Image 1 (cartoon, rainbow, N blue to C red):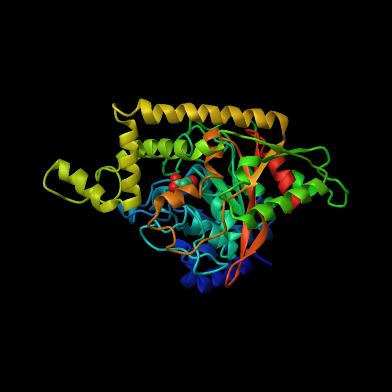
Image 2 (cartoon, rainbow, N blue to C red):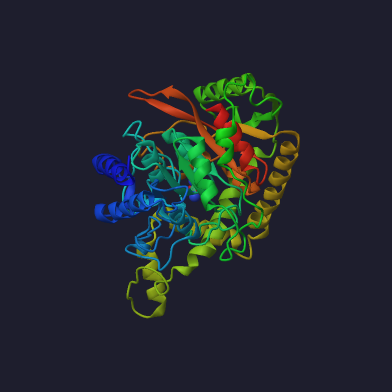
Length: 465
Ligand code: GLN
């Protein structure tokens, strides 16, 4: 097949499924996509060099900047906003030959777990259209799950790549903090944010990661650590070997398989762990007593950082401006009309936690908890190659079910937020199904690795799937 044939078939499927799914906030015009595909075909025909992602059709979460498409972050405040540059990750994808087909839906500024907090539309879960795809990168996860694109970028501040990957039955990879440049990623909580990858296989996610990783002079927090050739090992692994994961130590986090977690999710994850054992892993149970502290610490820190990051939206520097009566009302009205209610709630929580009278009780306390969590992960990962938990305590739930119950929604992030607080890499992949009343719903397993050890996660994940 040619790149043009591939592009045509993906565009066709995307346009046919999009009215029911609403995964995209923007799709490139056919002629723009086809022109890029034609150029690739031309290069291939003339034996010119094309990148490792030549012709790969990708979706990009709409909080990641693209110079040729709007980047709204799911907010009215940035409606029609077109950044003057590509995010570093997008630039690298394009240099690799990928074709960016469009921008995917998300909870406004990444704040949410269902994609219902988008100011524009609600995305449906392709497995059951009455259910949420998860969030905040729900558009990217649904798009890959429905084969509207081959792979996608998302962002993960507290689980926004991994939880939607789990709900939509695709692979989601959250890299180590600093592995991928955040330049051009609309900031939510800068000490936690990371761009991540969606694919329909571990190899796809790994190949995507490889092309976007590395130091970037535009992001001082991006790491100078060398980028291993993640892609090479996908060929090297010999599936016929009887115990391909022999000797690898796997720690199952006890606190993640207890009360509050759907029993069917627990049994799927336990089955997956037995499979890892068959593949040669040495499985033990580990305890992270501080695990449940992650949720309150995360929500205090993420809200605090977001209240500061979002202060840039003043109606002057970016996006929509509401002309009021004087400067204060220009600021106030632009923000009042531009931000949705979830975002306003986070800003209120964050400014409260950072205020002089409460700083010690909340923000400082949460930072101390963060250190405890980091240390307990470090200890557990000194003794184990990877740690295991479910990706979420449940499978995808109904649209609207938790929309008016933010605490219940926040509680669903329990499996993922600790990993961001510790800055570690984690891979989520499908490991089973739960029978819903009208459809089978995918369950995801989460594998957590040591900092900058994405390679091991990808290897184990690849053999496992
Ligand atoms: N659901 C979490 C939140 O609302 C995580 C979101 C994310 O990772 N962007 O903050």
